[in-house]
Length: 187
Image (cartoon, rainbow, N blue to C red):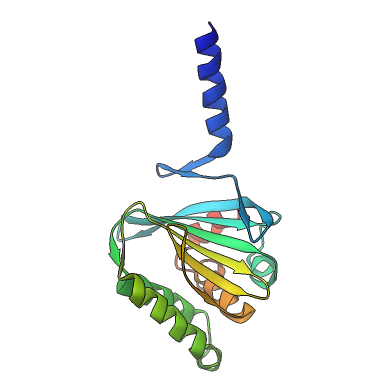
């Protein structure tokens, strides 16, 4: 009987740690970034030609359902990308850059040229991501956006403008995928 009770407790505790499962990926219901407690705002799966590319999670200080509010918010937040397929970093960078271009004017892109160059350098260093890898994009006010692969920092890109550009990949007026945008906003 004791063994059964311990088993039930273990199952309940593990459910609390990964409260949401998306496409077989357990998403923590909360994370700590730069001393801030963040909660899972929403999740979704990025697909391309019927292939699952990654499961995305958006972590915020407090839940939000309006994209413009999330993009304008200057607080700590995280976008987590759990890779579901192997991919060269060049291909992933191309997808990021295309989505950033779709959501910005040429003048806005020009103003971010240094940050976009830094992003390219980070992706060129990584070379490729594999199924099961975790990419985190942590915004820390005053420091910038920390890009990590499997909890190893690859670089920090300064400025809130650049971070807003990254958020627009998923939450902008022309997101990479409408249902992913809806999912990240808790829909």
